[in-house]
Image (tube, rainbow, N blue to C red; front, side, top):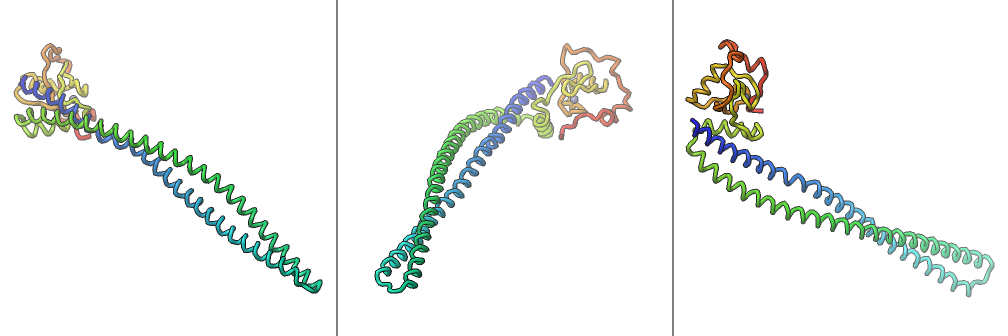
Length: 264
Ligand SMILES: [Zn+2]
């Protein structure tokens, strides 16, 4: 029996390390997710701002066309000035020239405003480009670091797996399954000693007869409260009468104290 316990402890050591590494590997991509999200948001804003930039450029082209057209009209009207004969013609033409001139000025001012906007947009886009690049570099570096870490962890996992498969073929499947489950759920501890009639895993008082069975060591016993495998530790305090329970009490004990279950 002592050999079995020794094997279980050895397996516990392997399994708890293995499960911790498996959990770590699962946690790793979460750290990257936040960085990736920031990058995606930056890129989205960049695309939107770039669209604004392009439409402002288009707007300037349009305004320039309009301004040239107004300029052309004004010049045409100015030429006509040489051939007019009446005061009325003069007044009408003079108005045309002034209107065209005003239009020209208005377009010019609009173009200047758009060009100032464009400059601001350009530097804002440049800043964002830099931020995107920085974030991208950070993400790449993090990714590489994680890849290296993951492959280290996977190598370690393979080693543990190898050790595990050396031990497990000799074990009872049912016990092995239960034991793996307990270690996964009980933060890596699946086999604990009984001390003074108390399970040192969950600190519940165990029935005296049950403790005697454990001490007898004929078969593997699981704690009725936390499901951990129990073993008698030589040098532990002897079974004391104070912890004796009537056999009738034993069945209902788990309900009364609401002990832990191994499937939480
Ligand atoms: Zn227990």
